[in-house]
Image 1 (cartoon, rainbow, N blue to C red):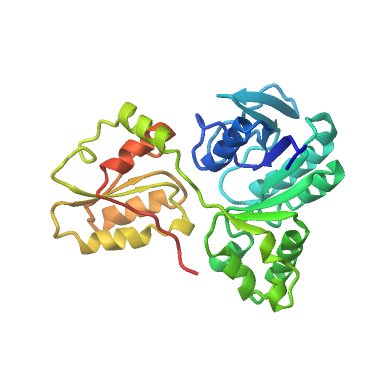
Image 2 (cartoon, rainbow, N blue to C red):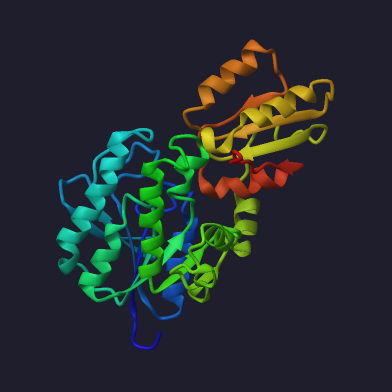
Length: 322
């Protein structure tokens, strides 16, 4: 909007691309806003998610630092592993410290918040305190994931409370941007939209999926290659998965499919990534003599991903079903 020139992109898990690739969307949005004349800051935790890296080493509660032309505000948070209590506490610590130091930071006109309901709904209150326009960005199905993956019963009291918090959070946002194509139907199914007597105006919701910077993709594919005899073997038919190896991605299904193709001598399944399910799945393959599944690097730098994807015959994206 005219006159609204300072934007905060609040995403606790965003980090400079040299450290982490999963939240490229936030960095790319920052770059686009900056090209269009806005002053943009990515507000994130100092601890890089799933990496043993803290971007604040001197004990400061926050730092403002530029990485490859993108300005970050890193908020000091505790380290954690996995999805236990320490990670939950890091969310609340992030919001608490952001609220505490908000008046010392470049004042935003607009806050675009990649939310993780219920852990960081306090960012909305920070926006109200700063008199900034508040836009919710829905990139994942929080808190729905708690029910979808069996952690809470969908009709139980805890989930009902979380759904109520979610509905109010969306209601109070100025706009809602979502990257999941069916998200608006999720709102309708819950009866939260105004046409079904609810409180959410779907006209203020906008679908923007995760795009790809094709120029950068093609440049990286040409410049960064991996010397791997399986990946580079033209005689093999390669099914490739690159990403987190955890419950939500349910790679056991991929391994079951590989087992069915054991007689197809050209077929090979290459898995890049790490997570809590990697070691059990590797052990499963070993115990069942599944030789056409090969676990590759636990981490590859983002610039190598285009090459890996382009060498695949089939790229796999898999999620657990509800």
